[in-house]
Image 1: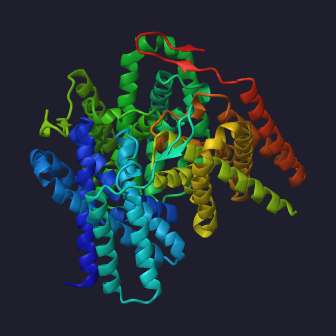
Image 2: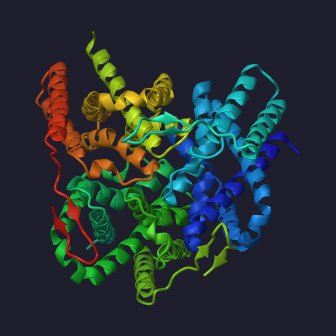
Image 3: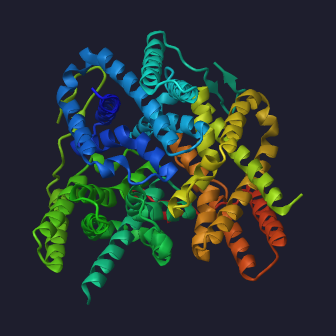
Length: 213
Length: 213
Length: 213
């Protein structure tokens, strides 16, 4: 399998995993099937879409290749059907989502670098790509974005994108860079879930002092 | 009356109806008059603005022709004044909103097609134009988007845009296409409200199996 | 100090004040440190970013000059550290935020005018720049946007931007225009806070008539 095809395949797995998290979130809010599809799409392509809109990089990927959108809509509806068995698959699902996070962060950074933006912008866009699908999902489902409260997520995106950029900078061959960065991001996220690693929290209430937990 | 003028008039009725739904939503959250105007504007032009930003189609309509924005602001404030009689007009209001939905879906698809995007993208953009004004309204008013929970709305946009695209493809003359598509969208939405047609809902709770109602 | 440097300095103070309001809002929702940084960034640059995306004006300021983003991230984290003393500094903080509002409104209008858009668009974009950082903050923190409910905020942006545009139109020299517009915006906002000036509110409940308070 060609290297570009391999990363495309991983990316496809990533958007499908994201679509499924969106569909489940819609289900928790008792939305109808159209709501499920729209939340699924917004979750899956929201991060990459926001990145390209921030960079002014048109046409958007899913506008140019609308098959992605159909795949995401299909995955969202499939989630409704397989929901009863989802709880037995929750570990598998977390693993696929972790893979998606790693792929999105690397691909987001990679694409930004290819557009000749500087490395710091590329890292920021890796985070935007990895994280903002979930943020848009939570905004549309009217809840405080989960990724700002639970196990390490955005930090995984930041470090994964940074690692990829650093290895690119030192001229490491692309396939090895991808292997290292993706393994790091995937492994780090899985460990964070397993051992409940989280960032310190900032608890600021009007009537008391702010404190970090 | 010229055909392009006729569709412009319908579109103007549509954005004014949307502005009024936004103003009422702001009123339910006890916002001030400036909040009313901003929510009114975001609801009325949010869908079309998002469409053009996704397509990279600049300048935006209301940036090029700022009179639309003034009309929307005026309609939003007018809503505050006529609010006491709104409940006697609620059926008329639902009808105007249904007309707006049909017009937005057709115009969104039409404009996308004119920019030489493919038909599937045009259908997606018809839905975005028809639906996302209301989604942005609900996000700004901090509530779960209504259109994902109540009577058919997004499906009306999808089918109306699809019908318009299909009739265009078969070369039907434009004025007849508009008449058929708009009548279909308007009638379908009114029937959905009258008979409480809704999409199946996806109810997924952590502690129970997901099920479709 | 050169005039352009002076306005840049004020703008920098403005984005740092905005970042701090974002960080505090994240703290009220008990977000983690990464959440604090992301909400801080979105609040500080959200208004200007939305303006440039609406105008199709690329590259974005913080993409071209990523140092701003690093300064904002630093200010957000600093807020966590100084949070315990923030309540003793709340009046200073309100003053800095008022200055930020005035600067954002003027700079937003100024930049739009420089891009050859018409004056009404420039006023609208002054409001967008001044106000939407706070709106995005509140949406991400899952609360009804404060600026639509409390003391005059958006109206200050509107009048400040309008004053700047009007004085430009009459050919007043730029430094004097800046001095007058910024003083007006800052003073007006401070007076609004001091005397609890607010816009009339629109209270529309399903079961009662809408009324203006």
